[in-house]
Length: 286
Image: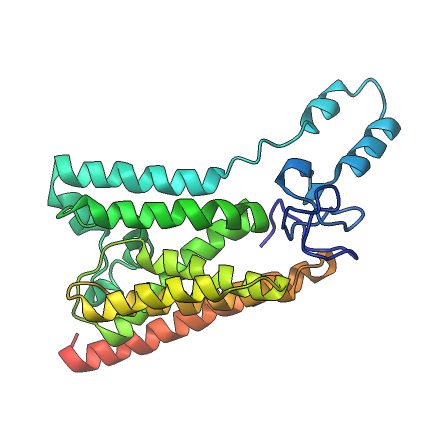
């Protein structure tokens, strides 16, 4: 899956070469040095560091003024993260003011998997209206981890991670709780937890605090009624798998392998969906 961030490079020490105190694993597409959000400039493919941008400007024809504008430093705004958060809030307000029709159309109910498959993804954008805390918790977690991961992975990789994690949560619900009604971004958020854990381990950073956060939230899902722990576990596993693919294929020369790896995770989830549907159909005669 192509995207605006770079995963190649010969220098991979986990910190920006211009700001040693800032951790990152986005690499300059041209020279391969690690660069933080402040030092990243989007290019046609990946990001470039300030030195490579300066060299490109010096070698570029002076008449190409629009090229200089296109190379202006990136604001680093996590557009995908904020867009997902905005969509979730808008849909929640629509659920509150329009009524249950919005929820009924977007929630995930496993028996509808074959006839209305979009629900396996749209479930990651709707929340319970019984209490705003369901929405607030997921949006807070998305705000904390989404911004970091989007900066590290790039917009398209991050979007793929979110959607695949949400899909993984739905698959787990289909397999383990096929008669339940599910709403919420928790599966996708747990996928972000899983991917972030993989990235931290790969960069050699301490991950005990994240393990504690994941563990506490998993336990909450098991002990409090009405919470889909199945979706949490499925999203977490899917996020870990996608994170492993990303970290194993960081170089530009491995981009095709990265695409194949992500497609492989999707194919696995689709295969499990088929298995889950067959078991559900056999059980209820669908």
